[in-house]
Length: 129
Image (cartoon, rainbow, N blue to C red; front, side):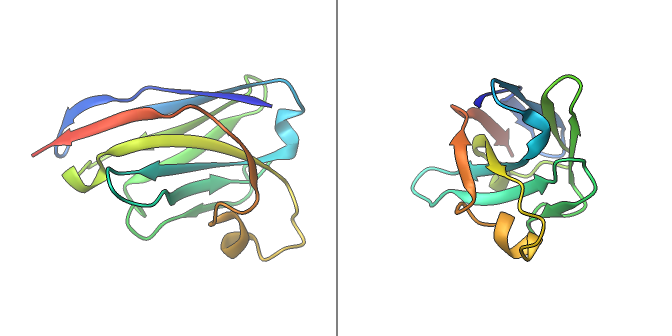
């Protein structure tokens, strides 16, 4: 499956952005989709994930209550609505796809990079103070 992330940009602290991840190829509805981010000089970190049918979502503590992940399997897209943005949210944001394995401890498994085999190219989010 190929992934394309878009929607990044420059926004002031307190503002909002909506990122979108479009998929092509493969069976989109069979994948868990995750969003990760990487700030300059830092490791890539988990942001949010959503199960194949949107029945499960999981967020990093740092974005809980501010970010919302959603998906539309009819359009092969996953969105990340980001509100109340902070300068610390500045990073390149990546979407990634991993095969759905619902029998595993879902949050601890899909909250890491391990299960994600396909990655998009990233979109830059810059939050000014």
